[in-house]
Amino acid sequence: MTEWLDLCRAAVEDVRLALAELPTRADREPVVGSGAGGDETTAIDAAAESAVIRRFETAGVDCTLVSEERGELRLGDGGPTRVVLDPIDGSLNAKRGIGFFSLSVAVADGGTMGDVGFGFVHDFGTEEEWTATRGGGAYLNGHLLDGERPKERIEILAFEATLTASVAEKAPAVVDLAYRLRIMGSLALSLCHLAAGRLDAVCSLKPARSVDIAAAQLLVREQGLAIDLPEAPPFDLELRGVEG
Image: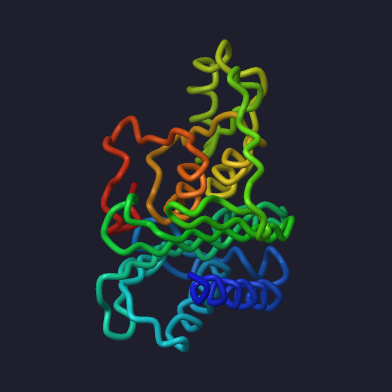
C-alpha cells in the first residue's frame, strides 16, 4: 500500500494549495452546484475534489472512484479497485476557518466496507495522519496506535451530523449514557479519535455515507472496536455511492 500512501500524501498538498487559493470564508462558501448525494457543493468542496481527482488521474490509477460531489467516476481502465474519496470531511469547519477537517481516502478491492484494504485520513488542523491496512493495524503519524482503548463507561460521546434540531431531539436520550458531549464537525476524524481512545463513542445523527466513513472505519475495526449502522444493517454495506 506504499504507493497509495504516497499518492494520498501528495493529494494532501493539493488540497492545501486549494485552501490557500481560497483563503477566506467569502472565497470558500459560495455554492457552485449540488453534489451526487444531494448536498450543496461549495467553492472549496469543488476545488479540493478537482485537485485530488487530477492527482489520481495524473498518477495513472485504474479504479472506480466514488467521490462526495461527483459520485462514481471511472479512472483509467477502471477495474475492480474502488477508491472512496471525501476531499474535505468537515467542510463547514473548513469554510469557517475552524481547524477540524480532513481529507479521507479509502481503497477497496471489492464493493463493501469489508473490502477496504487501506484507509487514510489527514487532519488539516493538527496535521495528524491516520492510516490503516486491513489486517495490518491502525497508525497515527506512522506509529502503531498504542492500544489505549475507549473507556468502558462513556465519558466523552461525540455527536456528528448535528443540526441544532437533531441535537435537541437526541441529546436527552444519552443523558444517563454519557458524561460529556462533543460536537466536532468531521465524522471521519471523530472515528479516528475513537480508534485512538480519545473518544469513548461516536454517534451520527443521520445515516452515514460511505465517503465519510470508509477510511476511518478501518482504523476503528483494526483496533477491535465495534461499529455499526443500526438503521441499515449489516455494516458491510456496498461502497457504491454517497447517499446515506
